[in-house]
Length: 220
Image (tube, rainbow, N blue to C red; front, side):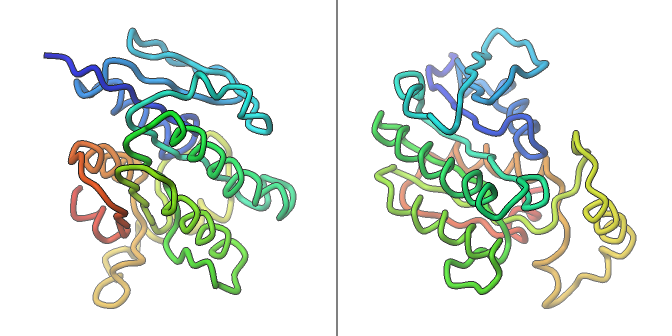
């Protein structure tokens, strides 16, 4: 029997989001998957509904943001965003707006990709923004909030990032050395994070749950 649940995913063109989208489309849990983004995705599927949105005016799309489970894979880098202000807009403001609007339509679960080291009190700007986002989302009236904190993500991105390519190469060659207290910092495959998100949704639990990179690795 096919479930009547609806999933909504933001950031489906990204590294984790692209894997997450494929898993959602394959899952019998969902009869419909709404993928929201700035431009169309080169994906076709009977269950897929593409929603082109302007994230700066997300309120205009509020009546289309109706789903049971919301998967938020939004994220950028300061370099790609062009400034700290634009980074904050993508990684905090857009996520906050999405959570607020979907909660107002009684979405049950909100699952969001954050980062290892997220801390609202951190002196590191990136970690602080991620931490502020987490604190805001935790306060939203969902039945369950799942926060995923991956370490360095491995996988093929659409855009080239030299620093991440170098780090990923190092991680693949010397990853076996990351044991003991260094184990939580081992790089993680983006598809592993996506699988962890879907598995968490399937639990249909309640409360706020934070999934560490090390915990997600164990599901692989």
